[in-house]
Each structure stands twice: as structure tokens, then as C-alpha cells.
Amino acid sequence: MKEYDVKCIRCGARFPKDDIVYTCRNCVSAGPRGEPVSGGLLDILYDYSKIDRERIVKATGEGVWRYRALLPFDDEIKPISINEGNTPLYRCDRLAKSIGIEELWVKHEGLNPSGSFKDRGMTVGVTKGVELGVKGVACASTGNTSASLAIFAAKARLPCYVLLPKGKVALGKVAQAIMHGAKVFSLKGNFDDALRVVRVLCEEESIYLLNSVNPYRLEGQKTIAFEIAEKLGWAVPDRVILPVGNAGNISAIFKGFSELMTLGITTTIPRMTGIQAAGAKPIVNAFKENKEEITPEDNPETIASAIRIGNPVNAAKALHAMRSSGGGAESVTDEEITEAQLLLARQEGIGVEPASAASIAGLKKLLEMGEIERDERIVCVTTGHLLKDPERVIQICEPPIEVEADVDVLRKMVRSPFEAMKCM
Ligand SMILES: *Cc1c(COP(=O)(O)O)cnc(C)c1O
Ligand SMILES: [Zn+2]
Image (cartoon, rainbow, N blue to C red; front, side):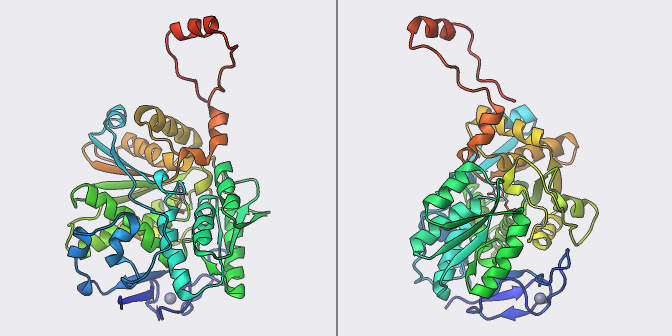
């Protein structure tokens, strides 16, 4: 039996492993908006003295389950898996040069099976749900969580309920959720409303909640840190930069690096740097104002729909990750995000959805502000694939040029100096 504890990060209360619990029932207090659901966040804690570090550094298999020595399951467990993880870590010299730094890597999580890092969390979360014997799964989503959950629920043959904010979800993500057989609701409200509603629904109807408030999700996502360190020869970059929405991923990656250090595999933790959109930046505000609690934003707005979140549920974990690693938080405008999306696409061949480009936009901005040293070894995490949000591309790029099926016409165009399609 793998030893681990489900523990409240605020009051230290522990919960049995077979208890279906998302936030602490011991220290329930009013949330930022007076909602009574806000007990402390939970974390999965292992007895690290019983974990053999050789099982991590000499691991076999690929992707998330390669690191099963640090996942909350017995070795015999049969994962619900679609080969998630094992994404490329690209060295991006051309982009590094153009923004004026020495060493830049991009971890392209858009190359997960469903096109976002959410698969890492879902393989662990849904496998845990099956182990717990749940009868159905649900989530609120800005899109990618629902796309991923729909797939894993299909694999696990579980009913899947998805709440999407009406008119606010990128087309590719909706397509995935309905194609893979989830029951999809278009909710009249924003993401924060959807999460508030689904949390109550899951408690009352005994459906398993798979938003990132579920601590098992983050156990899967922490493997991003393991893969980065392993690909760098079990070394740690100076800084990791990523977009922040509900703030689960930055918390998970920080945890992954912390565990590697606890096991004596690495010796440092990268500066965890979170980027939000200018129209949805409660964590950036709290970080800069040195506050422990965020002030929720009622009407978050940005073209980066995956991070259009005003009341991030994992704020406490994320603020701890950024502060204790000496990292930071910054916001970027939609224009800066679009510019970074184009840079990634055209200089490095990396196609990402808008939220993902916030990492590069944030890097550029922090460099200009003098907050990042030019010789730092930096990893940016690009969280979702370009094809998730084709509508945005159509909005910003010149449409294809219509021509007759006539070689003479085309010849003339091809012989004039080459110009890529214009954007914005
Ligand atoms: C979910 C998501 C994010 C935000 O991640 P959090 O863990 O909620 O902070 C960022 N980018 C993409 C593409 C996402 O799908
Ligand atoms: Zn508690």
C-alpha cells in the first residue's frame, strides 16, 4: 500500500483516503465573496522516506505514469490513460535571441492527446474516481478541462457533466466535449459562476468533481516538473513561466520541483512566475500588494479564454509557490498575448492558443522591466494547442487569398517577393 495523507494546507486536518472531499471540512470559513464553501485547500502528502529516488531517476514507461512512484496509487493500479504527458521541451534559440536572452526552452503542453496539459491531471483524477467507485464525473470549464474530462470519462465509461460559460468557450474545446460524449451545459454566467454551481451540485448528487480544486488533479500535473528536470539531465531551470487561471498548474509544477528536491534528486527550485491577463489578474494584484487573500474580479475579460477567471480557487497554493520560490507575477494585455502567439508560431513553429502565449508575453515584459536577468535559464510552459481556438486566428490574420485556377495568375504572385499573411 502506498502511504499518503490528504491534508489541509491551512489547518493541517487529515482526511481518510476513501473520503471524497475537495476542501477542508474542519476549517470551513467564508470565502472571498462570503460563500461558505471555502475550507482550506487539500494537498496529497507522501512519506518521502519510503519513496525510492531510484524509481524516479531510473523510471520506465512514458509520460505521467512513468513517475508512478510519486503518484497516489498502489503499483498494481490500471490507469485510465490515453498516453498523456511526454511532451517536447524545445530549445528556442531564435526566439531567445529576438527577445534578448541566452537560454529559452518551451515545454509545449499543447501536444498532449487532447491538446492541453489538463490530460495530466485527468488521467490521475479519473483513475482515482474509478478507484473510489464514483458513479459520474463533472466539471466547470473555460473549455480545456471539459475537453479532457470528456475523453477520460469516455475511456472510464462514466457519465460526464460539463458546465461551460455561455458564448465564452473556444470552438475547438466545445467540439471535443460534445464529440466525446459529455453532457454539456451552456451556463448563463461566467466560469466562476459555473464552478460555484458545480461544486454544490457534486456534493449533493455524489458526482465526482474534477476541477483543479480536486487535489488529485494536481498530482498528475506536477509531472510537468519531473519531465522538465529529467530532459535537462535532472537539472532545474532558473525560472519557469506559465499562464495562470485557476492557479492549479503553477501550484502543481512547484510541488513537483519541491518533491525532486526533497528526494535529493535536484538541489534548487525554479523561480515560479505566473502570468495573468490584464483583464483578469486577481493573483497578480495580491502578489504585488503582498496580500494573503485575493480580491475576486466580477467581470474578468480577455481574449485568452482559458485564463478568463476572476476568482481562482488555488490562489493560496499559487501565492505560496511564487513567494517561496522567489518568483513573481505579472499581467499582460491582449495585444501582448497576440504578439507573443505570433512570435511562437512564426519564429519557432510552435502553435499555441492565446492563454499559452501569455507565458512568452510575460517573459518579454519582465525582461523589459529588468525583473529577469538575461542569462537566466528559462522554461516557458505553453499550455494549449493553436487549434483549440481557430476563431481567434481568423480574427487576427488576413484570410486566404481567393484565386482562379489559373497558373498565369498564380505565377505572377509567386514571383513577387514572398510575404507571409499579415496579422492584426
Ligand atoms: C487551464 C488552462 C490554463 C490555466 O491553468 P490553471 O491551472 O487554471 O492556472 C492556462 N492555459 C490553458 C491553455 C489552459 O487550458
Ligand atoms: Zn482545514
